[in-house]
Length: 300
Ligand SMILES: [Zn+2]
Image (tube, rainbow, N blue to C red; front, side, top):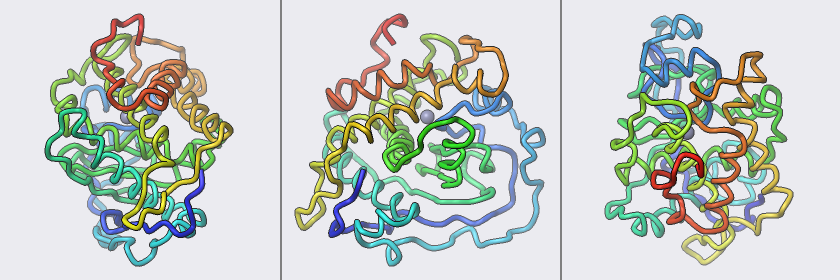
């Protein structure tokens, strides 16, 4: 998925985030993966398991919390094709434009741009402390995405996804989807302590996958203020990469890859097949087709 070199990016809401006091793990955040069992527990229960994860223990601020935004560093599509950080800015600019237009169709009358923090190592959030082990996530009280771009390497090495640019942007699109759920109220309505087949937690996650797909399906028509489209048309190979990433972060794949038993009752994000299916639903039918809360469990 390539950006048009001349597309103008807006990096004002994408900021670098330094390390703060780390107080517990981001149990209130909602991520792309169930990752490992302890995080799965923390996500489901909100129990503080930072000790288990080897999270920080209140060390002093090594970097300032606010590392500044990327508005001067990433201004064009050409830069988004070159660096991961600018690709995040490019994805954010395109997503923000898309949802600014699309959100009203989901009943959102006051669309707000989320903040978007790039961090490495660990950082504080309104959902608790986050480490790289958390994976990318959205924190509702902050209305912000938190992405450690090292995760994309992990996606390749640990989860076996091909991890191309569209796979990276699928991850951003998924987390942005959680922001949309914050705005539609789906997030507040859901019972997020529930896991397993048909649970609200899985319905939220596959809906975020569907929203990511909806954006990808329209991405090559979304334009900057000068009428330059941000992204070139998506190729089938790139879609395959994104689907591959969606499958790689399916709970079944993660559980078997981490040597554990595949136990659907503990799932929080859905199977590889479910995640791919909903991504494709969004891509082919748009965001209004993403009503994952109204389908029976066996059609999820
Ligand atoms: Zn998620």
